[in-house]
Image (tube, rainbow, N blue to C red):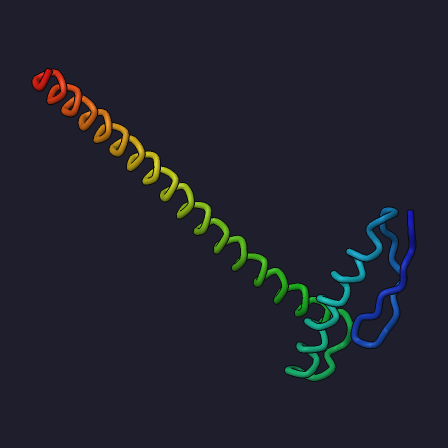
Length: 110
């Protein structure tokens, strides 16, 4: 288990993480720090607990929006895959029909 120091709103916090996850945790901390600093700019100093709560709620809101968009994209992908399969079936049917007509015409000419 590793320990790293992250800075949030200008204050250091030591946190633990699994070995190899240090860089990822630092990136998450930078994201959270930006959110907390934005809240602080917008609302003034509220105290760490309130700033952290507001920052976390805003990030949770962004996550919920992203999940909603992902759900919509997945539904659209499923619709498009279904449409593609339907069109492929129609194309195969049309090709088979054309092949039968060509074979019939070839047989008539022979």
